[in-house]
Length: 343
Image (cartoon, rainbow, N blue to C red):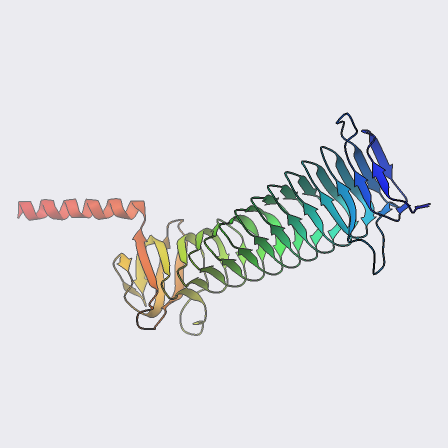
């Protein structure tokens, strides 16, 4: 059966779509404010097709909800005004978008383009495949626990993205405009870039490509595995408390720490060496070399470093002792003072 007219679900009850609806579907509250619950099951197929078809196939508004459980939405699906959308199986052929305090949950299934959250909306991604990007705008929040993202995850405009692990991201993680991103696990195959006063905090995960802090942004690293460069560029700041980094030395000189124009990399640990020679805490004066030591989390460090070798544009790399190191230095000073007094 195919329904050609515009279809509105606003009865305030539970309804199921199990056939073709050849137009945009609207799911809204009943007149008395009772939410409407619509489930799209296998065989359910919503939205027009063709060159002149509307870009939106489904709207859910108010306190109503939609569950896509095996069906298909031909174009965009949009959630507004505190409504909810749950994808457990099936397919959205274009974008899934949240606005205005709505809540979207993706457990499985396919979003053929973007998951796009706006205006203080929230999303939780537990699984599934997103063929393009996950995007967070305007103070929205996205929590990611699993799934596959075939392009980027990007945060804008005071948004917050929390990545807890179990996810594979095939391209970049990027933040702009005071956005925050917290990464505790996952597999990331391309770059991680914080730009425009944003912050990325990494406590775990596997990172195959570069990590960059650019334009007054900050990257904090206290765990994870990093295969290529860690770069502070054009006023960026990187704080390294732990993690494992590309091994430096002869034959592997392309990867390591790079502090570029007006930028700072601060490394917290103990037992630091440059080219095998012990060095004091504080700012590194050498332009390049192999930095060794033990990081705050106990991980061994042996990686190349470079300070941008342009007069007036040198980047800064600073070595900071761990709290235990500070205590030992204080104790050593006390012992030395006692010996001098005894002498």
